Image (cartoon, rainbow, N blue to C red; front, side, top):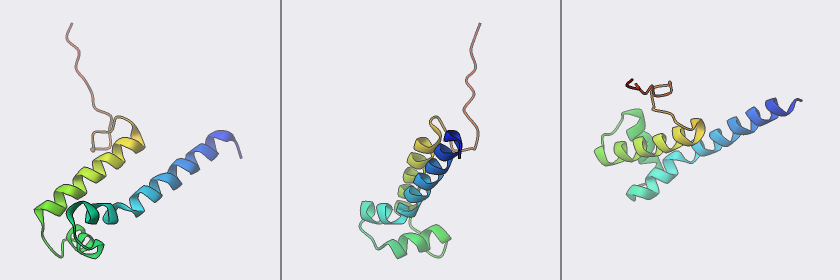
Length: 82
């Protein structure tokens, strides 16, 4: 397998590992059980504190996965004045 394909697979596996621990990290941050975080994420329960923590963690994951990611699936465009 070419080196670039190997690198892409490693990045995908690493990202999957980071996602896997998301609810646990959020649960530790807000002192609740991971199952409660899961229920909030699925919309079965409501908690502004957990939702905010989930958003922060997801933004961290997006930034580490894609360098300069703005959360909308595209790189941020910056207007330059002349």
